[in-house]
Length: 114
Length: 114
Image 1 (cartoon, rainbow over the protein chains, first blue to last red):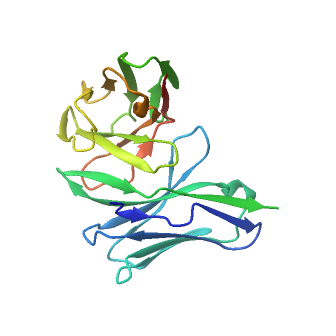
Image 2: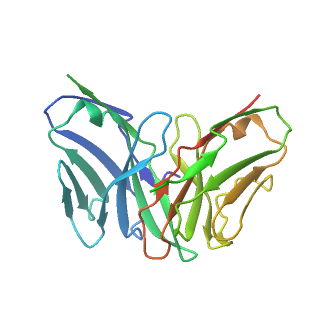
């Protein structure tokens, strides 16, 4: 059973517009949420994160929103740039055996068009 | 500074053969994780190391999979008697460990079992 869901496998946005990527989760025990970006043939790179005690975190063009009552996470990119074209994974973290295992969604392919 | 490195970058093997995948984490990172990404899927957790011990092996799909870490640094993931369903990209990540959720990924090893 998928604990983290990214229901949109792909998203296409025009350059300069806002990109909104969504993620839903089922386990309310998660206490930390992250977004990763992945280019082809590369490993995922950390983008932005948010603790469950917050509902918003902003870093430059990237803002993550957390709605705990809806168990919903979103990433806003504004303005979108062609270099943002990549696969975006949301991930949730919770302690396991003393470590911080991440549970990932299946990813959303973002394409920013000129 | 140097990031997480993995070798080989690509591995093609025949069904039934054993393979070893190597990961060199970021210096100073005490935690090391192995994930895999099958075609069209998200990242699937395999195993977590804190130092040389593995408190969480819950993601290893069968007893054909094993991993070890020596000197608190390099880790090797071994797959015995490979099957076609083992074909995937195997990703290694490292972090500072307890209390740190941000993980830094290597470029991955693409394993193809023919």
